[in-house]
Length: 493
Ligand code: BES
Ligand code: ZN
Ligand code: ZN
Image 1 (cartoon, rainbow, N blue to C red):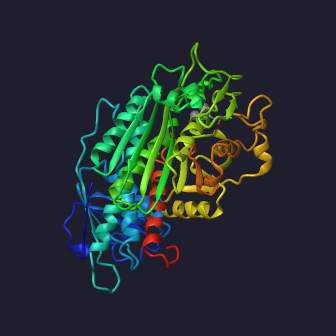
Image 2 (cartoon, rainbow, N blue to C red; image 1 turned 90 degrees about the vertical axis):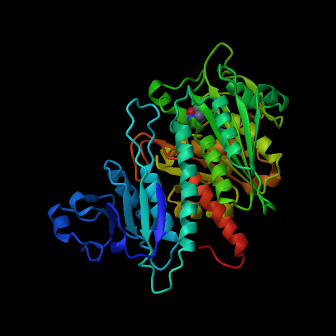
Image 3 (spheres, helix red, strand yellow; image 1 turned 30 degrees about the vertical axis):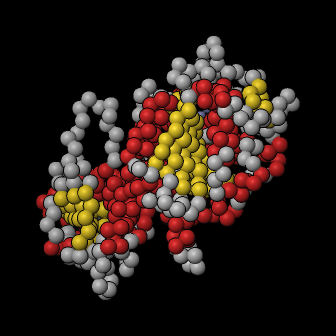
């Protein structure tokens, strides 16, 4: 979708369809011109409610407020409806409330999220229509209009959603088509698009040389060999170095601790952390953030076979830690243990990992919310703040010493599962914590995206399937960091 901005009043813009957000329940706004029709249709202007009036060339959509996420939701709903029509030239007021940036971004994000669809495997594809959305900034207060900030906001929002939609495409791709080697090819394609991005792909021999015994054990039973993928975005004079590690299980059957069939289906989504870090890197490169960004992925399949790793095996991770395997379905933490050791060799200022790590996180927070874990309260606060702005739902889950003890092993340094069935999202994070060096404890955040990364039913502006969880959240966080760098004395926005 092409998105343009103008200072022309909405009425003067030529378009085939106008999108009108209805915030006032009394329909008291000059853009709401079909009050009687709306009443006849029983339209109340509630969140996610739409009324399409094709003869008037207008679509009305309810919004509880003009908060960013209400706007995203409303615009996405409108676009989803318009997608079924032939209308290709759309217009909308900017609902800017005296700031040409915040809600412009929300409108663009909503439009591009609403437009997403994944039809790779459909033999009959809908004819794609190239649409244009024109934003009128006329309601922007009394001040003289400067379109530049709005244009920048549009470009920023488009970069963030393109990165999110890239992550969705990767996750939605069937596991036979997105093997570790194919994921590595995808990373190489991203690197080829930018002069500022380089890509390294390590194969099994590399993993062996790196002594990544935990990662190799998980990967062993698959006929699709593992890959360690490492992308670097390097701007001129970077103002910091941030590493993002992604769990890239292109399939998780559970291994010998085999998942029951109803839990195995959707496990192509176990590569969502990897897809997110690829999206984050691409977004960061497009946005030209002033930080060096590392995206590190442990990509493999957790399968069964005569050579599969098994419960009772003892693995040795890259840092020499011995791990007692008690459940082969707790494989993500094994892959991440080695990937996190590798990431720390890059000496990052901040270290994040993103992973569909535990079903327990979904039980704790529901399927729409990511779990945020780590030692630094300040960093967790920053992440939750950026999550709220981005529209992603996230909540902190606290560590404690008693849960940490539950990972004790009688025979090795640590067990790969907790001895208790409770607090599984936190004990998984505490397993990862074992591989975080003392000097990096306060720099590290673990994001468990097992809930929102993949939901089979449509929710909000997310289509069924992958949501690109983590991408918007982290890109907002990076932009916030950049803002702090540029405005050291200002408070959070
Ligand atoms: N990939 C799963 C976690 C998951 C569950 C992701 C549901 C998305 C939706 C992970 O590898 C797993 O199987 N974890 C186990 C851990 C257990 C054996 C300690 C789980 O959550 O049951
Ligand atoms: Zn598993
Ligand atoms: Zn898994």
